[in-house]
Length: 100
Image 1 (cartoon, helix red, strand yellow):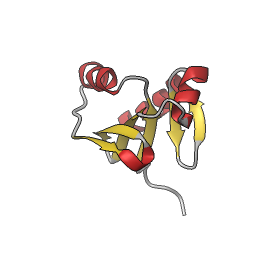
Image 2 (tube, one colour):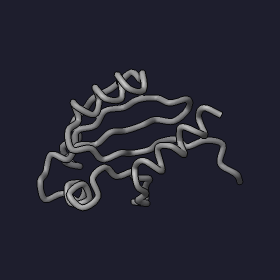
Image 3 (cartoon, one colour):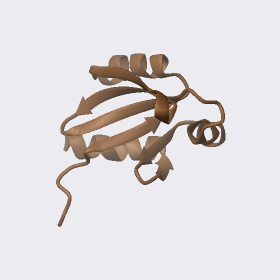
Image 4 (spheres, helix red, strand yellow):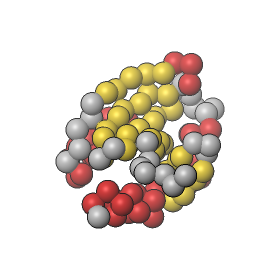
């Protein structure tokens, strides 16, 4: 079965508040939910792009995998189960899909 859309994309960020401001100002998106998920040790923020949820994640645990990925790669683009692609290339692909 061919996929019809991407349901959910997670993007690890170093600072959630700065990332929210960036997505709202630069992309004109509206953050519709912010929450802390204690058991996963992350703070999250959600945006919608078409039918796709964009989830920004900031780790609340300095020993966490997200933090280590950010230290090594800067911004990372994650799709469960942990498929990593450089942020710029993946984001441009998503924008092309949504805008075309």
